Picture 1: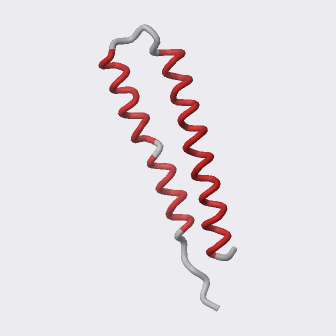
Picture 2 (picture 1 turned 135 degrees about the vertical axis):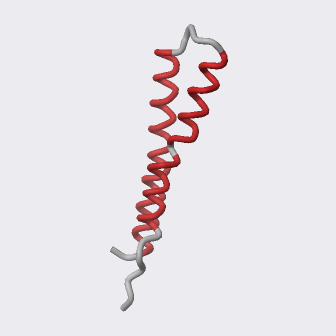
Length: 70
């Protein structure tokens, strides 16, 4: 796979990851944390707001993978 295609596919996957992850995080929060305190909400959104970085880092590393030398 060429480097350009890898970057294009990775960009689309990264956008999809962020959208799906945000929808799941908000759905879980509204279903489970409706009666919780502000501190619980803050902690939940802090953790979930940082947790999406882990799969995104793997995807970005794949996108920047080794370039083919012809």
